[in-house]
Image 1 (cartoon, rainbow, N blue to C red):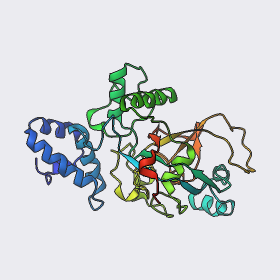
Image 2 (cartoon, rainbow, N blue to C red):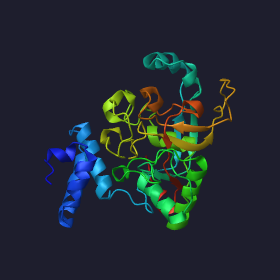
Image 3 (spheres, rainbow, N blue to C red):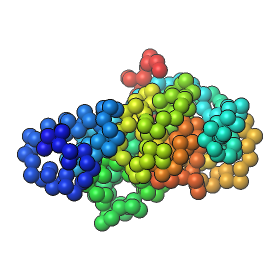
Image 4 (cartoon, rainbow, N blue to C red):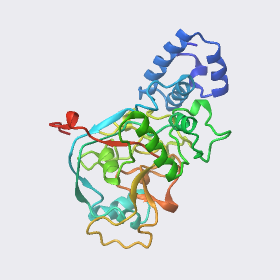
Length: 315
């Protein structure tokens, strides 16, 4: 199969899978390299990048290692977290949503964080399947059939996992890798997504549907991780806007000095980042949601930094 073959970029997975079964190993290796180039090329059509990512899922995505997830390094320092009260009327009008939805994220305040590493990608279906197979833990995502995902979805983000399942996964990979993985705090997640320049989206201040998988893009389902290279955050994390929402470790509580009142405080865990099935306002870096308002939700891993790499680094 050549990288110009129309079948390759058709996203017709049964036909592509049948074609792959007849290929020599050396040709599969060459195809893998070609597909990696396609998903990183923003000039290629979105369907081509999706199909190329799904092909990588079928043949084994070299970017994904269940025991050594690719991580981004964030140095210690402060950043401006949350939303300015003065911005809310204009932002709410821009997205056509109630102002109260953004008041959850007020006031903007400075947060000091220690250095940490965070997953470049969300945890994928194949990584979670490895966990299930290795441990026998019966925490199966609610959208899986026959207790496993379709092969081509191996590098899509896993979702529909209970909070207990997420914690068990973090415990398992920590034991296997010999280091302590956990779920990011809300502050760590927002710092990763928006950097230190208070951007509204991982790439800047204006929403662009071509940079992420939200309802505006029309995909209507999850996509392989990392196929929106122009949606990358300043630190190198991908899919922090759209695809699936992401659980953080925090329960929903007001920010320091907030005057916003909500009977839902303390009743649900925050999710961040937006989702393929909902609108762009949820993909803002400062937007807090969860509970009855969240869509399909996954997670990414984080671990605290070691002195040898963060000392002396700057953002």
